[in-house]
Structures are given as C-alpha cells and as structure tokens.
Length: 211
Image 1 (cartoon, rainbow, N blue to C red):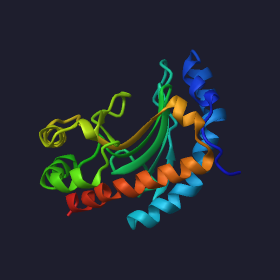
Image 2 (image 1 turned 90 degrees about the horizontal axis):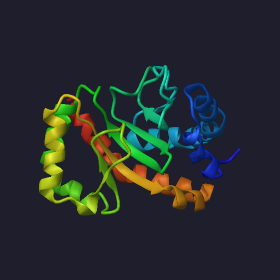
Image 3 (image 1 turned 180 degrees about the vertical axis):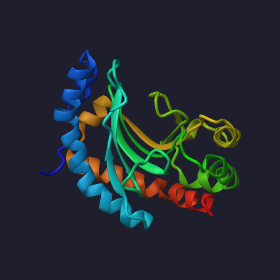
C-alpha cells in the first residue's frame, strides 16, 4: 500500500491517556505509516549516503508509566541500533511532523562533529535553507528557524555540541499539524526526499569526525 499522508487520527493518538492505550494506538495507527515510509526511504537514504541504511521504528520499550509524547522512525547504518550513530528521523508530536538529520547525546563523535560544524559554518549557512530548523534536544518539540539564527547563534549551537556532555544537534524541517494533514502522500514523499537531500552533507561531514 502506498503512503497516503498523515491524518487527524495520527495526531489524536497523543491525546490518549495511559501508556498501554497510547502505545496500542501508536502501533495500530502510526506505525503502519512508518513502515510504508521506511520501504521508500531506506533505499533512498542508502543511495544518498553511500551506506546501507537500516530501519528502526521507535518501540518506547523503556517506558513504564508515562506515555510517549512523540514517536518516530529512524534510519542508520547499523542493524543493531541508531542512537550512537548519525541518523535520520521522520516522526510526529501532537502539534507537528518532523524530518531530521540527528546526532544525539549517545554519539561518541559529538565533540569532533561540533568542531567540524564550526569549521564549515559559512558553507552550512549557504546550504541550509532559511525555512529549515535546528534543535538541541530531541525530547522537546521546540526548534529554531535557520533564518532567525546569526552566524554567532550557529557557532554557539555547535560549540554546545562540542562541550556539553548531554548536548545534541538536529537539523531538518517541522510541519505544523494543519499543513501536514492537508498534504497528500505524493507531496509528503517529495518533501521528505528534498529534506534528506538537503541535510545529507551534514551526514557526510560526520564521516570526517570518525577519521
């Protein structure tokens, strides 16, 4: 079945009270859509990145009480996991859809990647569109629009990744719920593909961090 887009029902999942009830709704409502997107974007990202990319649909297995406020599918170049690796995400909060490239707190290359980001700050300013956003914490829905950030703001963001133990960095797009619901499946595929093309140079930069 082809991906048909996101609906109000997908966002309503995050209003369901209780861990078990919300997890069941995530599994039956959202996860099948992640599987459809995965079938398309795992090979797409493998081609873009030059690495075989594997699918990791969030299971929220560590949760015992509080239901998840967001959920996602991640793509990374390992079958075993993604959190320690540079990776890509597609996911939902109750308020919006996000499409990210991410290096999160478990990554061992954060310090070196932060340095590389600072060294390439002008190129990043030229290549990341003003409408894209940056986040420094994947557990919060907030983000900062590229067009609102000065070079000094970006440098501070990259410096934080380099020096703060729990720091993270994510770059991509967020699409508000109303706009997300109005988009059809073909529009979504095109938009996500365009986003992944735009942030792939950041993935390429992480390869230097491992050198």
